[in-house]
Length: 416
Image (cartoon, rainbow, N blue to C red):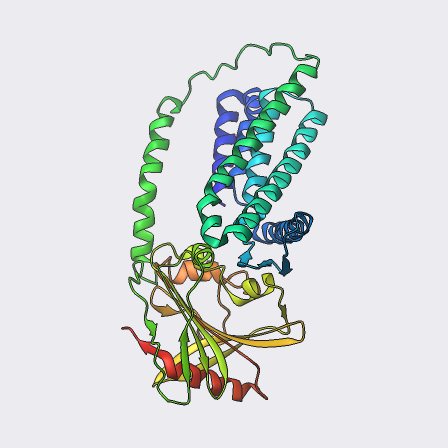
């Protein structure tokens, strides 16, 4: 909506100052700005998932040719030295998007005909995907030979090298195509005379004042809207202790690998494994400031990327832990004959995101108006907290809820 507003206003201004001639002359740069707008979520998600699958299978196949033992489950590559997760950043979606932008720019800069522009776009896309496959395979090979530490050491260096190769090759290809193209363009007519008229001379000052007012207007909206000012959560509401309440349970801390910690990017992370009347794993994550990174780490995203299949749609549930009520979603997954149940509860800005039977606004299956409603009634907050329990299924839903309450009762403590 913001980009559409800017485009319409700019287009109207160009038409007012120079009519159809000026609008036509500047149509490409006006349209080019749209290439910086994120793709629609559904489109980007489909492309990202396809690229992740391609990178995973191609990397494993290449490692086999190199004599390295590797296998994969979903987008997790299993090596002798550990596991490597091919996350969204490793899919190459960013390289693909930026390469398409550069291809569009170079096509206009060299004033290619339509056929050459399409050829440059297709070549750039293939170049981006191929270079990312090479980068991912190199990083996985480094992880197989030197473990996660070696992968992290060279991660950014290999990424910078990939970016340099892509853009150098793309610029070279565009230059080569420009030499092969017969010049059929003549110098265009003289520049359009914008002229003067009305309040056109003060238009720049008016635009500058409007942009300067944006932060003040945003602050006023957050302060005066029904939800009140932005709510800040500086520390997690909950914590996990390593000692169990009852001797029948044994609690073992699990340390996140450096790769997993980098992927999550959270401020705090705790993981515990419990054995006793049942087996379970408890994960607790907290993102202090930029909570946007935490929205993607929901079971329906992370589990399916690890090769699990969602058995049914999630349902709402409420857990009672030491006189505290925790609203959550219950997910069910299966993989290779194995089944698991996941309870997840999320707090945003210190308040539970799930109320009543509503959906989390960040899940795939949430109503499309959920995020807009959240922005309208409770403006953007800071601080995101996620509590997850993974356990085998029980004979019925009530038994699973009781077991989840028993598990959390052993290790969960209030941090308020």
